[in-house]
Image 1 (cartoon, rainbow, N blue to C red):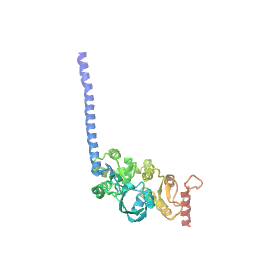
Image 2: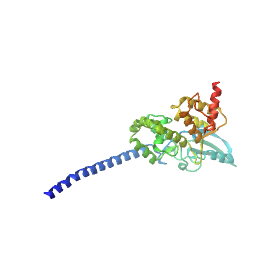
Image 3: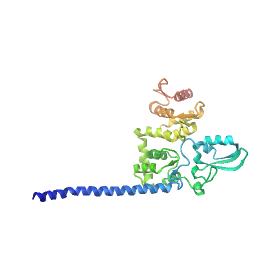
Image 4: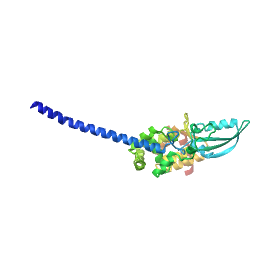
Length: 309
């Protein structure tokens, strides 16, 4: 009798274990299928040559200079040519150089913003693949499918969720990280996840990190520490404009009219965020210039007060 009871007990103990194994197996298969769908979705937008989802119209610095020179051509000396190459050294992946004529120390160049990687070019002056050059970039196509403008702040929020490290493209690992966190393996699910993503980002516990990330994400050179004023104005409006509209509008106006600062660094960027959160505007109650505020904010406060007279 004892042996029989022990046998029955053993059988009853094995039942939950078997059920747990089945559940784990089913969960593993479901997770594997989800991962496959996420990867498939990635490759539907990725550039076939680079294996990346490319973004030819990114936020912030670098793109501004290129947009100003979208189509520019003329005669320049070899010294000017190398100076030009230096100016765009971090954006060479976005440039195709068409060399029309080579004379003694003279190049005729046409610089076109195309979003092509230099590795795709047949040579320094090559055109690369026509199909790659003419097809729309993956981010714009993705945004169109989600019915979101590529300049929408939620695209930057998506980059934050993916922990994307460099502007201009998403890698497969970044894509997997972001979409798994959002539980989205189709465009439809990704579109539906955007409102919740925005709520997540705008929580006080997350928004400071997102604001800091936005600045870091727009640093396009390896040792770059600051961003040009024009790009900063666009970025401030995009990231902070809906949260502190009066402060951002006034600060952007100041930045565009002043002549003392050509660029903004991370300390100044974060200082303005603290300023918006801690200082009453436009009365500036609580603002003490003797405290550790960036000098640019002292100048901004003086500028606003002068306007108020």
